[in-house]
Length: 371
Image (tube, rainbow, N blue to C red):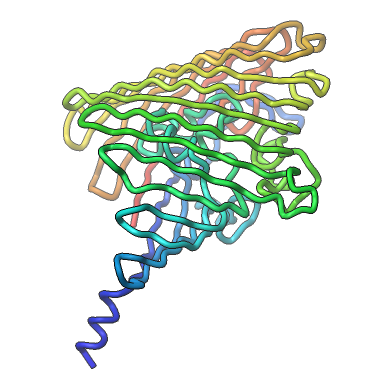
């Protein structure tokens, strides 16, 4: 019986994992309802979203495995579910994996901008994450939206190269309404890492709630998980990083285009963003690291009648991370954003509300632990 039990254990496994991130945040100027002014708040998920999950695999023979992941997001400050009250809102998929080929999965999953390019950005889970996101997370680097009904293939790494493709079904007789697709490649060789990826969503503001994106899943005043919605949105992103001993430097560029958007007075026209980010981290000691990032976002709208000019964002973000152990960290981070253009107001993604002015400052002290 003991032999049989050990044999069965060797053939399959299930792992419970998670992370908890809590902090105290100060925003110099925010708008919430009819209130305006400084904001002090307890927050959850400043660097990484608080989550727990189950992942498992089962050996099917010949190097083939059945795999699954069920991952939940939650707010540690109040215990509420994340992702618009979903039980497994971050990820929920099942599939097959073979070491020599890759992994094929079906379910709710991340696109390849998040998988391949985001790790090279300051929005990565190993850096500043949500607070360092580009305005409105317009390029989905911080996965404001996950892809539902998605079939996804990610190859095994061959000579440093990984490729992947994803298609998310609309689940509607109108086949193209609220569907999505994404693809990309990632390359790593020694200290150099490079990635490029593409994401397209048809109808993130549609009435089809059963498609790739749920229009009822809101973030702030946005739709479908995005701060912005559109009939058609396209994003292409690329990035690279290079490691110099204890330091790593990176550059990321992304272009996002929202067609049929009502944001920023575009009158159902086009809103686009070009994001240019440089970032760097330095490990001062094995348990102490510092990082800084600067992002310039060049916005364009088809109708500037309401605001008088195209918006331009400048954001500087910095972080100090101190490790108490391999699983537990203390952190201090700060972000400053300035936006130019008449009537535009600053809005750092984690601030708790847009500033009534063109400037906003956010500072956070917190702790995260992983299991």
